[in-house]
Image (spheres, one colour):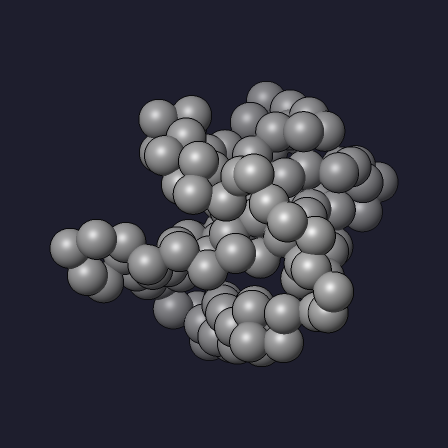
Length: 118
């Protein structure tokens, strides 16, 4: 049985590309289409000694192929989640975060279409 078919709402998943990890929360798994509806939480860039975290909580939800996600371990995200919470509501959308999300998704998708190692 594929582990991806066991994703549950509220579970944290990771979409990994090179040195960046997009951590997301599962909203719903669409089994009939092999898709996962997720809400981005944060994009973590591991190129430096101290990982750089971009808050993605105000970015758009994604409907993405379920087989591209992996379950995130509690131990890998717990310290990053502490940096995000508590959170003040924003009066406007965070355009730089939305642009970073779009750039990450575009690069990830291009690499997967070109058959590159993800």
